[in-house]
Image (tube, rainbow, N blue to C red; front, side, top):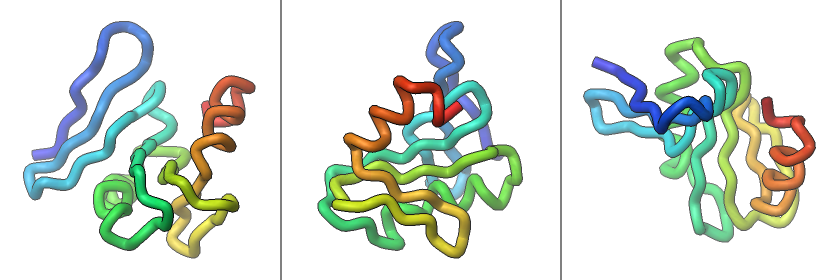
Length: 95
């Protein structure tokens, strides 16, 4: 069973699946955000995002890490450097 667990009325939650996949943040049920401290994104870092994409519920799936440049992968996952993510979040471009 898949499920959301919310953090109050702020439109912020996390997602987890029975198979163990999880995503750190679901923002207003529109964007799924996984945060990693890694310098480079790896397929392992995106397992939860890929699983959630299969559910077809999110408009955006984003991996935030310490990459140097944004990348849009063929599978639709957007890799954002943390500084770009924060700038986009505060300017309203994430949701």
